[in-house]
Image (tube, rainbow, N blue to C red; front, side, top):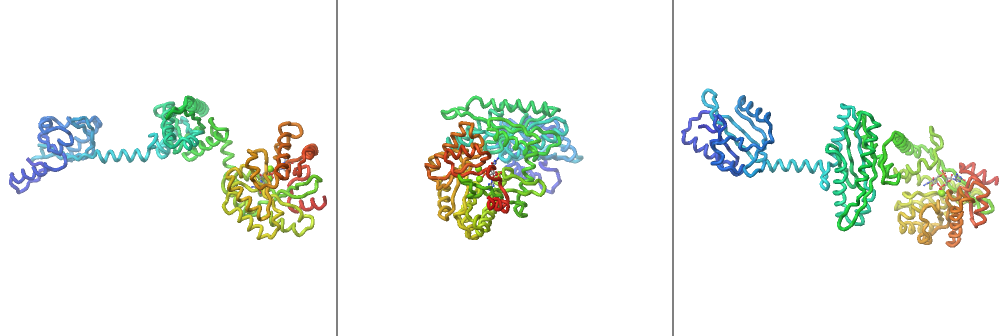
Length: 571
Ligand code: C2E
Ligand code: MG
Ligand code: MG
């Protein structure tokens, strides 16, 4: 019998048998059947792989090894190929004697005699289970989160992409939930990463338990989970209501604390939801869900928010402003206005420099609309530097005027600007370049800026004070106003926030705050100025309690430098 495709060879029968024997000792599993598929011979490698001895296998058919993982079509295709091409090869799952299912690469050749009649089949195979396992492992690593075994960001994007396609076909809407664990970071920081990890695993299970089998719960990284719901409804409204209910379920799944290493952990969730329809894009959808999550966090956390078009409008405005703001700086559309500050005798003793954006289309944009934005995107650094330079340039111009040279100019400093390592050097350089008297410059800081890093703040403030510059604490009373740190700061002035001034006299708690700030300032030998003074009654109340200085519409609005100068000189 020829064991391979039967090409006649001028070799003796004996030689052929020897060759066949050597081939049969190969490390590949081998099996020979007759034309009907009954096993005639197997080799040692076959026995090693399958667990069946030659005695157990011979006389049976290869169906002995069936794992059930291939269907009828698979075998049909194999037989068709053997019939037409006389051979077949491919991957197949077989089951060994001990029940182990293994993958093998199988090659089957039909042995034919004279007229093409099949006499035998010879199968050889290698176990590729290891490679298969590696493939599965790689897939798992690439698409699943190692800790929670949930789909990871990559698989999630895949699934959302699929969901959008299927939504386009079915016309049914779905929803994406961005889920953030409110207090996770503090637990992780205080109780350690092991506890944090266990908590995430438990959270993953609870979230999974809330949703249906076909829904995707994924872990985006950190403590951010994402839920994808598909096929909700034809109506977006109904879909939204359904999503709302699921969100509530997710949050109430956290009602019972999670018990870990002897402690109860109460987790709360912030959830941002974006309902999607066929026309949505993957990136747009993720952005919307994230925006909604940011809103949920802003709303005080432990809540859920849905993305809505107003949010989108605000986002677009913000993006537009950001791009325009950069140009505003280059094109010189920023202006400094100056608002008078007066003493008890109503004499102008200083001004506060207030930034304005003269927008070619939007008109005058107030700082409240663009400074927070500038802080987020970092533009506050070049803008802050410009303000400082501009204010010093103004001081230089005013130093040539007998009346104006008496004024002190207060400049607002933002947290990010102050936090720059070279802030002290920056102030020094600007002063040196303009040649102005440093005593004419005052910097306004806020409490939160100082509290970010009290030690660093004190150090920088001292260095700047040594240059001769003074400091005012802006919006005082709205932050922590803790006496313990206040006393350590080299401040010259406290500025009572407008929100208190607004309600005096009348609202007794605000009256008390204003009075307390004044006496606090006196105790710490700091001057006290009130901002937002609009009425004579307010001024009188503050004066009665010993306030030193005033700023507000009662004395003058912020004005361009020229107008301010005219105002001061005629007063
Ligand atoms: P702020 O430093 O507390 O400035 C006082 C704000 O109160 C100014 O608003 C001023 O126009 C307003 N104001 C003054 N008197 C009255 C009054 O009697 N009634 C009312 N209703 N308002 C009054 P503005 O100019 O809109 O500035 C808002 C905030 O923007 C400032 O608050 C400050 O935090 C920030 N800002 C302004 N310019 C700059 C700047 O150059 N750099 C930085 N980092 N922030 C700035
Ligand atoms: Mg200010
Ligand atoms: Mg203020």
